Figure 1 (tube, one colour):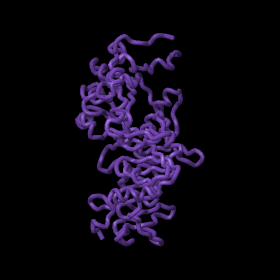
Figure 2 (cartoon, chains in turn red, orange):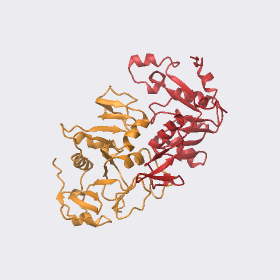
Figure 3 (tube, one colour):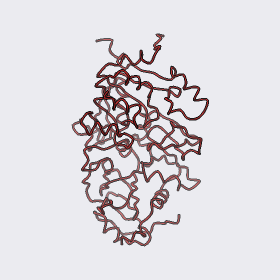
Length: 198
Length: 224
């Protein structure tokens, strides 16, 4: 199997170009791959589209990426929270675009893209503002909205041992584990799938 | 009416809603007041709580010094996992919600209409809201219970004949628990099941913008 290990974090994230779409896991602060995001911030990339559940917390991680002007569009389910003040400031100033997607639809649109499907029919959002302009269909007497796949270019992710210092708890074992950031971090290149015939 | 003392406290509303949780149910609790329900589930009633970020079997907050920073509720509060619980992928968590595997969801609301329409994600004067998992959970749960104050802070009715607020999900609400009453949503509209001690059915009707069926009105048991 091809060794895809990057020697440095910089080498790994340098493949992310201006305008790329990043699919970022996590819920609130837990699970957000902050060390990788810091690496992207350090490259000062521009016009990134970020797909994630929330709109950043405080000034770190996704909030830092937004604050440093790297992000032109955020696609998420829960943008308005007191801890996402950095996003609100840029949104109010007209400096960042927002697309709100119901949480289950957001997750399923990404899964659908990765699974090679052309979309899915969901009962979520039928008759609501968030279904405006989307095709709808009635199947066996029940109404559905057609949701399209949501494709990304990269998916940064972290495991337990790749957590940034704030994310570790006080346990000595975990402090030792997370001291080696080389483990537990990954950057999946979604573009490598399904392009062979082009 | 409107003597503050006759309104139920948040704890009392939670205690009343907890009485309707049935043994063996899988239940999703919305952010805010609904998260107070688990404390009032009687022992011996085995209810499992689903948190849409991927936790089936959500338990109470951790004891001091035992918190896992990754183990949080949908409201981002530190929680625990009960014995027999599981972590699931985000898409699986919502397959549970949309797929009718939630026996009940208890959510807050800005407005509930007589046909069961739920409005709880965005106010009409806002251009945007935080939908989170509300639309998926409301659309897919077997039952949707609403837990809220009976009226808005300005006194406006939240229980209405037809909704005027942005929709979360159509025709989904089955029961409403407020600081004044317990109301069922039926194919024939609202049925007033119970009123808070000290209130009359007419008191409740006076602050409700839709007709209430008052054929059999009981009193909320706040001692339970």
